[in-house]
Image (cartoon, rainbow, N blue to C red; front, side, top):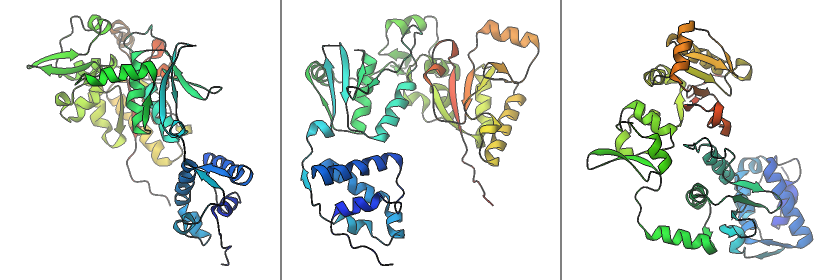
Amino acid sequence: MNNVQFTSKEQVIFFMMTPSISLSHYDYKFISNMQYLTHDKKQITSGQSELFEKLLLKYKKQWATNGYDSDQLNMLPWKCVVVTSLPKYTNANVDWDDSINKLIIRVPFKKDFISSFRKEMTSYYPVNDSIDNSLTWSWNSERKRYEANPTTHALKLAYEILPQFFTTVYHNEVKDIITELESNKIEYKSPTLTTVEGKYTVVESNYILDEKLLGVTLDNTPKCLYLMSQLGIDVDSKITNGEAKLEFCSNYIVECDIENVDEWTSWIVELGVKIISMGRGSTQGNMALEALRRALTETKQVFVKNNLLMKLQGELDYTIDDQFIEDLIAKDSLPILVQYNSIVEPDHCHGDNRNGKIIIITNGRTVTIT
């Protein structure tokens, strides 16, 4: 193969815009923008240069197919000017906007961050259904930033998630709050069930939780840990001690493998749950592989064997005697949502459509393709 001998990264960019390299949607937009900046503006930032070099390595196999070594391509020079990226464009910046009384976040684009941030926001389960069920942080496309009402939870999300992806800088009033909080050593930053001097207690509680917990016996039983998960109360690891059943009960959203369906279904029954709400991916028409269809059938069979009532989109899949239904209504038992998809919608967790727990079924079995 007689390959063109590139002498600069600009030539590599031009080649990447041809069908020879199959780019993802986001990567294509980035390369297209880089072509504009290097050809028309003749200037890029050091951050853009670093990201471009990472993309060359990402498509290493395709480069090899075309007869090129991506490591060698990374050693080529730029013809355009490369200026040092300013911190405000590479860091996560958290500030307060007096004009609209909102917390704000400005971050560089990063897909992994966006996915994680959305997941954390949708997994939040308020103890009071009067709380606004919309996402804590909303994206303002006009101002190109996240905005949130000034709540403890909004700031907590920013404080915990942003440093996982960016150097995080706090400004003005927000900086003062963070500085004060970090000066005080706090072992538990959110309501947590733990033991103090051998007695079970919820630390960092609030008046809403205190009302909800009136008359509740705190211990390490599955039903108590299940209640904690519904109230948004963390459970200290020294209580669950890595035990699978207790971890299952104490987390609101859990992943369970089809291989262990008999085991975790028995835990559902032990919690007193009577209804299974069949969610995303629970219809055979949506299952792409025969192995997944078999897994769905197997799951339903185990539920039926354990007298669990299944419903789909508000309708019952299987009917059981009328007395059972009356007992269920009297106990006001929340259904458990079971789905084969990792996407969790906010309305699964709140209001009239809320669930007692969300189980995401995984399939770790080997799939043989013939």
